[in-house]
Image 1 (cartoon, rainbow, N blue to C red):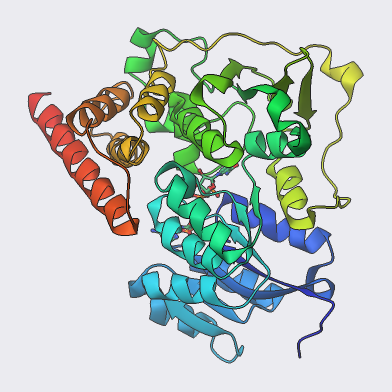
Image 2 (image 1 turned 180 degrees about the vertical axis):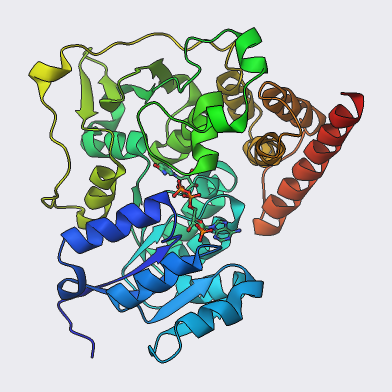
Length: 395
Ligand SMILES: NC(=O)c1ccc[n+]([C@@H]2O[C@H](COP(=O)([O-])OP(=O)(O)OC[C@H]3O[C@@H](n4cnc5c(N)ncnc54)[C@H](OP(=O)(O)O)[C@@H]3O)[C@@H](O)[C@H]2O)c1
């Protein structure tokens, strides 16, 4: 039976790193007494998906992989939990009536369900990056039509969201995104040339999914965040700065025209940003590490090196060229990343491949609709895959 005082929520990507942290925060903030979980989605980790669904009493569990439908159905037999699969299952999960949706599916697969949730007016806690990077204008338009709130979950954007004084927009001078620098912060290009996915996926500060961890090492994660910040906070590319801050204590900052800079700090634990997104506009008490400034002792900063980490330069190129260049960058990079994970190309090849594809599709215009986004995405992946194959052949 539905209790009116409980908040109805859905978690897209509940089995991932953000999803698991979200389920932990939901539990900490009252679990079943405070929340009705309408739908959970996963892909391959059915053990966890089934366990989560049973534990929180979800109404619907969805695996994005149609081939796993029967397996999930069997695991949830006699529980009364609805089961669905595939892209249509994700759409069903996103479309069900809830006031809050965590969008934490990795990659482009997360875009269609997040759009559906935005269109129907749910508040969107946004972790997935492609929604803004590949389809920024269209996604924001969907949020606008739906009338829900868009609350960033990425620690950097959550930080800016928390300190940005919207009444002082005219006084905003710059947004400063902090970057840990990843595991190769001090490495030369020669050293980086030989790294494997196993080394690249070990992040010095954050515990995250494989793809985002490797993207942090190459700084393509920061490249995407620059583009996301542009859309989220409606700032000019020149107003976005990146500074390397190896301790990941300052999650990002906003600089104003009087020289004042306001930073948001916290332990590097995504549950802080997730709890904020779940409680917004209030704050809720959760059990995560508190900063002990006496123990911290120092915070370091350094300028990013765009020669060793070309991803940042490519993000600026994408923003300058406009249109669907960011979608092209993101899709080509995801394709190259998969090839790197499979050991088909080297670490440094990723940025070179992305740049080649961006140049080849340099004149691409704005997207009129999602079909244009998907078409650009497909072409960029195709071109990237072709270059990967050529490089493999030449190696
Ligand atoms: N992790 C972080 O700290 C962090 C911070 C900021 C932003 N983000 C962003 O948030 C998103 C999620 O990150 P994550 O680290 O949680 O990733 P993750 O650990 O890889 O989890 C991804 C989630 O998406 C599901 N999934 C995988 N492939 C799918 C597909 N083809 N269709 C539908 N669902 C699929 C996974 O299911 P299975 O696990 O069941 O296969 C899992 O639930 C990413 O866009 C990432 O860039 C993450």
